[in-house]
Each structure stands twice: as C-alpha cells, then as structure tokens.
Length: 452
Image 1 (cartoon, rainbow, N blue to C red):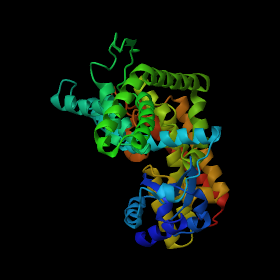
Image 2: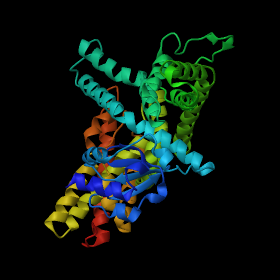
Image 3: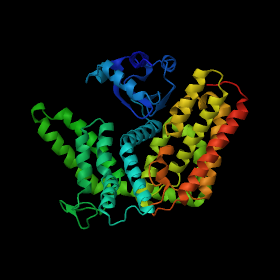
Image 4: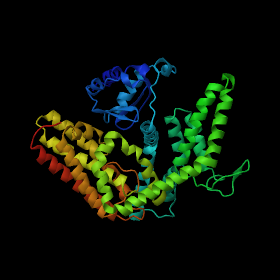
C-alpha cells in the first residue's frame, strides 16, 4: 500500500493542512481535530483506498484505517504545515448546548484514556505472568523475582494520576508536564490520604489519590483554562516564569480543596453504578453489552466508558462487564471474518478476510467491523448473536478480567491472582461459543454469497 499517496488524499479530503488543529492516532484510527468541519469531503475520504470508514466522535473525525495507521500517520505528519495562527485564519465553529457539552466530555475522556492504555496492558500482562509463575510454584511471594515483578505492575496502577495528568493535559492542549506535576503531587506521601491538612486556614478533605484518574483530570481541566487566560494577559518576558507556577499552584490548590473530593465522589458513584448493574442485571449484563459492542466500537464509545473499567480495577481488582464483553465481542468479529474467508471466491479476497480475522482474534477489530460486519446486516446480526451467547455463558459463570484484555494473546489476564485457572477455562469456553456461533450463522445466513 502506498502510504504517502494515502496521506496526500486524506489531507485533500479534510480541507488541507490549515484546516487541522491536531492529529493523533490509536491502534486503528487516524484522529483529526478540524478547524472548519464543513470543509471535509466525507465521500471523498471514504473512497480513499485503505480507509474503511469515518466516525465523527465529539467533533473529532476518526478515519478507520486498521493496523497500518501508524505508517499513514507518519506520512501525514510529513505533509502537515501546522501553524499556530491556523485557528485565526479559519474561525473554528464552536458548538454549544447540552449535546456539545456531552460530546466534549466524552471526547476528553476517550482521548485521555486511549493514550495510557498500553502501559496498563503491560502492567496487566506482568500481573498475569506472576499468576502463572506462582500457580506452577516457580516462584514464591518472598522470592526477589516476584517482588520486582509485583512492584512493576503495582507501581503503574499506583501512579496512575501521573499518567492521567500527562494524557489529559495533552488532550487539553496545555503543557503535559504540568499535568504530570499535578499527578505526582497528588501521589506524594504527605498529601495522598493524609488527614488534618489545611491551607490558608481552609480544611482539606482527606482523599486517597493513588490509582485514581478523575481528580487529576478535573484539575487539569481547571489548569487548562488558567493557562490559556494567563497566556493572554502576562507579558512575554514573564510568561516563562509566571505561567507554569501560577497554573500549577492553581491546579494543586483547586484540586485539593474542591475538585479532588468531587472527583473522589464521582469515582465512588461509578463504583456504585457497576455494583448496581452487577446486582440488578447479574449474569445478563455482559450479554447486553456484547450485543451493543459493535455499535460501541463504531462510535468510539468503548473508550469513553473506560472510567467504569478503571474504577472497577481500582476498587475490586477486576472487571466483570466491559472487558469480558469486549473480549468476547472481539472473538465474534473474528468468527465472522473467518466465515467470510471461507465464503469468498477469489484468493485475494480470501487472503484479505483471513488477515482481518487474525487481526480481530488478536484484539484489533476495526478492520473486521468496517471491512466486513457493517457492510452486511446478516453478518452484523451474526456477530451480535454470537457475542450475546458467549457473554451470556460468561455472565452465568461469573467470569472476570483481571487486566485490560483485547484478543487471545491477553488470555493470561483471566487467571486469578490466586493462580486459579477455573476463570480462564470459562472464558475460553465463552469465546469458543462466541466464535463458532458467529461463524456458523455468518456462513449459513450469507449462503455462499460474497460480501466483503
């Protein structure tokens, strides 16, 4: 594939470099923040060879490309001539109203969490390795190797506010190291969870900040407004000294006095939501999520719901809902793509579908979703039914994910911290149900007709 040509065509379809205020990418999507959204030619963008679809999430245009997105991003960056005055050259049309606010909130949350998910996956995999080593009695809890590995995965979750501070500050287009600074301060031993603190005579509510994300995100939002305001009023000669100090102090004091407790309450509220869903919906809850999962991935909502997952990991150490349902849904996409590989008539199309199937079972489902599932309602139905069946079994068996899971390589994350393999066996059965139900339905309902 000619990534350079693809980047050129994408740039032309979105209105040129002066219409782009920011560009990032995740595992499969090129994410563009546009200054004037009216300049994008959606039909032209979708028709580009290699672009599987477009998702408009919170005003951010996401071009679904697949596993090769990093190559396209590299070529795209080379073409860009981003200037700081771009927003002045073409006035950005800001949306107002409740819908715009909701979209903005979801955009900030999804854009923040997607940045540091890889390090959480790494921590989860290390935890899984520890579980395997201890279950086979290869190391003990007193072994120095165990202590080092345990410290690695524990530290990542403990210092989560630092990662969230950097990611949210980057998302808010402010100095990310100021965001990191706020996160580090909140984790400091003489502030984190300490009782009886006060500043200027004002009592500080005791909050434990380690392993949390909401307090630091709220603090960064406050600092972003402060920083932007100071940039406008502070003389250039003083900006380098005054802005970082005032911004950080405002963020720290605002978080400790007001936003930290609010963020803690929000985190507890999400924890209660998870508990309520588990109590009221019980074993049906993962199945309901699995049915909706293709739509959630299509809209990008699965990233916006990461706070629920993070809260669950922080409070109980596992997630019985989103991670379980998403994992099973990914394997359903793999089943649909595998069936499609059997249905295709040409070697080229069979190879494409097979490659998409491998990608899906490894946890990257956008190629399957946009290249196969959403192009055929029978296949979409098959994926939803297959995911429902597998997730229903998982719900009945109370399957739990002990880390961020995506595809088959992350199966060890279903091994309990006590080394119990029963949970792993149950998820294997669940994904087999999901995969083969989807495969059979896709094959039967499409009756040998090509649809990729």
